[in-house]
Length: 280
Length: 189
Image 1 (spheres, rainbow over the protein chains, first blue to last red):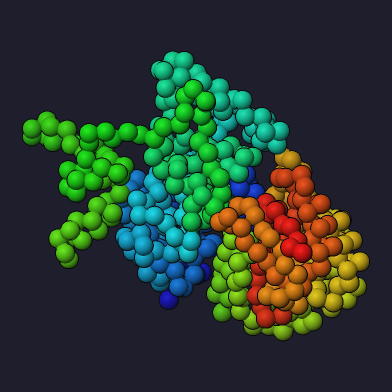
Image 2 (cartoon, rainbow over the protein chains, first blue to last red):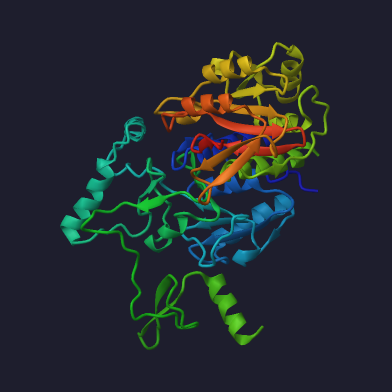
């Protein structure tokens, strides 16, 4: 028998996280502070997401963990193993089989269902941090719905580059009240949080914050009337392995020929697609 | 083992608050929590500990003692409590009074507001309410024995979003429905 409690954390730590999750759901986009326990991975390596996963997970859950689209990266594997070894639950790479999906930097290509919960790891939960260094003051700004700073950042990018240069972690307005960092997912994934069928939870372990976007909640990416929000464009590009064009693509360089090619970033989706095509 | 029971209860409550109006079923508590509904006892054991405070609406100290014994949580006056528990026996006057006193948080810390754990006879029959807001695709409805006057009071308390109270209803069958502050509720006449 494992000498650790079920799902590693002690029950009191879980209670505290669970209470924060419930308040997060009740106030969409608002950052609920929590104690953030020590766990056996370094802060900044997904501890916030992991603590939510550990507080949620039960014997009947099936867990999927992804790291930038990959189920097989060291970080994803280690998180999956820690949960698996302390709970005995099943893990999967298939999005549709999972009940809990913990992720760093991506929301899967396969649409989520209302019986699934998406848990995103967050390095920096505060969308106003580049504008204001003081946590005390940013909390006040959220209280007063004072978000001109968030727009100013985008405005400066447009003045300098003719477009917004925020790639990942593009800020969103949640339920028309709080501006929120959606974690470093590409802009491509922002629309997936809007009116999502699944609950989306966000955990920032180092910054000790938990927040949530309930299902069927309005989530709008910040934009200006004359500079509307745009997702990454992959015009004329397709995944080399599958030929898919409606997915988020990674750019690769063939080391021998120097040729540039693209592959699906969501590797499990790519694998499922190829297996289906081959009739496996 | 109790931690498996509380984990399951938490997920039911989480789903209830994520999809307001959706009826979820909580298991019975392995311990005797009477005169509370057994499932209310389990939900309290899931959420309460010595870091938070609670208030039970009636004068019956028995419930307060039981909850303190099982959770280590301390009782406090309604206006300061993190959790307000309204047992089935609470009269309309008491309920309105406690809701009025409940902490709605402040603009910097709206999460410091009270969560109301509200025992009702039925969450499947009675008055009909329309629900709208986050967690609801279009509209949903709630049929329950909670008097319109009480939910009118709840609407009044929650009018200054993000301030407000969040409610967890539990009925005699162990059904659970969540009503976060974001849900817009209107009575269907």
